[in-house]
Length: 560
Image (tube, rainbow, N blue to C red):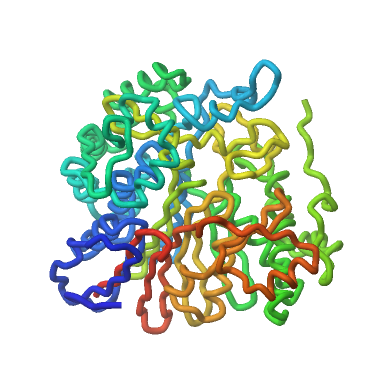
């Protein structure tokens, strides 16, 4: 780590964060930002340095990511903001998840033979839910922030107008979605060059997106959900086969929800609640680990216990979880110790439990790309925010005249019970499409507090988000620093498919042999996954330690 002008920086990429080279006045306490792009981290630090709070910084970071990280998030997407309001000692989850259009229905992605047509739920206008990010801007500014939106959105508007240089990671994500990006003239004109991937260093300018951001800065949510921008959004969606209406946009509201809270040994954990599945699934897993005496287990047994707990909790996710505004979910039961004991009735320390031996998922009666940032300000306000447009570059469609890249979050619904989505996750009627319903998510921003330290963390990664957070929390509870937490090798099990997927450096050969002897199937990943951003707070001194995942291009900064 280097220190320059009072700011401690930790980069995982080679981009220069010029904004952070400015002189920073001395402060009595530290503040920190860790995000997926150096320009976004710089915007957040600038807001904090100028007297804004963590919630103002969250708006600035979100908006800049919407400009410079189009493969992961944007104004056309949604997400969850986990907030800690230090003044009121209160935690709340701001639900800015997308909603299904009012004309949406459970069979909208089935062909005449009743088969799921994945292209309809993944690509183009029909795949897009109603966005939540612009509404979150106004809610954060009005109820929690200190600055007007004009100030918090200024840096994003500048980057949209002046452009930003793309890097190899942009090219990799654009290459993955190249064929879809080429489909639409409005998308090609911004993100490609003559229909081909632009070289690294190419400057991407988005004047239409800048104009949309200016409308939001001037008029708040009405600058997006009503008026000229809303009309252009609906016209573009309808022209490309979608079903949005002005009523969809007019009716959208963010919702404040109580997060999931539970305790594991001496740690208090606060995590995203439904329609995020993360808090419930983590509570189930930690309850099972506590029942199994995980902290006392040997090395191989610890991994075995983790996999068996993941398997059982993800099975419950598939059957029970959905938008609680539409379905009854037995959250208290699922997160109880009694339920953990019932899930472990067929647990064996010497044998992997085949997923087929667990109770079958109820049949019907009748990701990976996302972003995360963590912020702590000088008075102790905290934000952990995980945002998404689902697949890289979302639906691939930019709404003409707005610069807004639309999400493809409708794929997160269960298009047909028992049919996996793009991330291999199964679902049931609890997550079936209904008009206005919010689709189930794996995004899991979280806080973990022990007597000595507090963790603020989150990551993208589709279905693997929850298990990445699980491993990060365990690393934190073992005393690791922020850099170790975000770099930890990862593995994952999600009930179906019945295999442990893992990074190539997650296990030594002796561990692989031992797990296979227990009956586990292991599948090494061809790439390392996730993009975690974490801040660790020393509760006694208030000193901060921040880090961004070395796998990608993010940046973490601590200032005082």
